[in-house]
Length: 315
Ligand SMILES: Cc1cc2nc3c(=O)[nH]c(=O)nc-3n(C[C@H](O)[C@H](O)[C@H](O)COP(=O)(O)OP(=O)(O)OC[C@H]3O[C@@H](n4cnc5c(N)ncnc54)[C@H](O)[C@@H]3O)c2cc1C
Image (cartoon, rainbow, N blue to C red; front, top):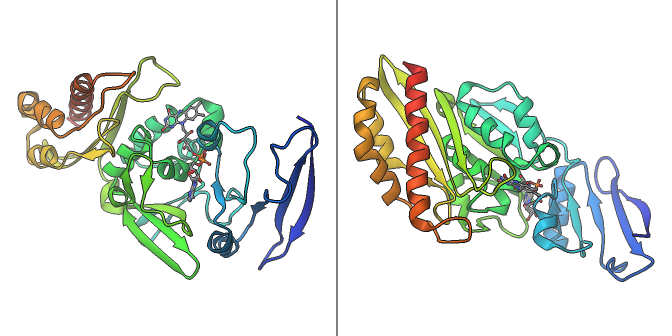
């Protein structure tokens, strides 16, 4: 498509920001009057734009382009990929911080404790490598798809999200941030800045399992993320979360309480009690990928297999 891009630099605070006005010479897909693109370096500049322009926030764009299906994007666009401090994994005050623009490839390359193995297993299944090097952890959460693969893992890690707007910042547990299918608690002037995981949730082993209609590049029918801490032959802590089987991923608090204190040697006997607990906690939909009944059974099976294999590993 023939197009021209006129580039100028807009100085807000700190280093100059880049603003492009695109014009298309063969069609009207690009609207010269309305399309502005800002790629700032400083969070305060981005937040100022959020407050005044209400731009479409762009990270890896791997959800935006399939969702809009538009040949081009209109209106003010805020590209967050150059923002300082938004990409990378760090430790601060006993919490692990994932910048919202951290890519799935960054997660895969990071040196993380075994409790994050489930998040790495999920990252490896998000699209193919091309998607993993562009798609971000923040984009996955803000899309808020019931089938977003990171959500059950981050819930099992007791993750909190950090949301920022001009002059203020707030933190919410992930379960409160995700309010429904493709709905979040994000206000129009807010950016998701980071995801924080508390140190107590970094204990133990973890695993993720996803069921789809084929092995790769597939939207989940059901998925399970499990984290177990085993001490002296007993389960000392458990976190189990099921995705794609309810409007938002579901933490299995009843099952977790039942598991804590159980001896590894007795785990097999718990299956009869545990699998119906999982299935009954879910509210899946019937759709082209699977029936609700199949999803309930599949989710219970996936979770239980993960619990058993982690118990075997810890024994
Ligand atoms: C071929 C293909 C396969 C895929 N496979 C999977 C899969 O297996 N599992 C899976 O879970 N997903 C999958 N996805 C979806 C997608 O890749 C992921 O959800 C990815 O993590 C989205 O990140 P992004 O940076 O590209 O988001 P973007 O597309 O840039 O943004 C997504 C949404 O979040 C908003 N947003 C992004 N960052 C922020 C922020 N910091 N603050 C506020 N709002 C923000 C955007 O405005 C937009 O509404 C796939 C996508 C494609 C194209």
